Length: 91
Image 1 (cartoon, rainbow, N blue to C red):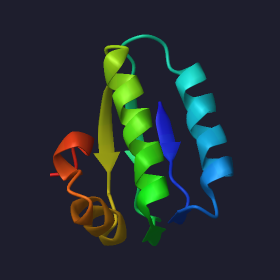
Image 2 (cartoon, helix red, strand yellow):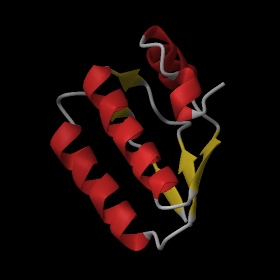
Image 3 (tube, rainbow, N blue to C red):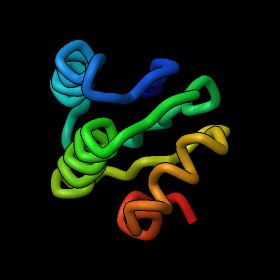
Image 4 (cartoon, rainbow, N blue to C red):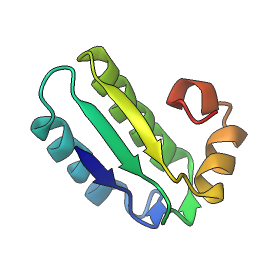
């Protein structure tokens, strides 16, 4: 399964983005592999990173794994600023 991230992961897009993540979790059977396409992310804030972290942890708890596909520099630096690169697997 692949999940394509929008270009903005911030408080302004949080409600819509959360809906996408919930739908993706619903489509993801136990122990599924999720490819997260992150090449288009241009803006990220704490709210967006929190949503991503919750999604990644939910996938992992179900026995699945997340694979990042071309994470943008904006995403990498935003996650790094919060000290969450390791937890999200963006190292």
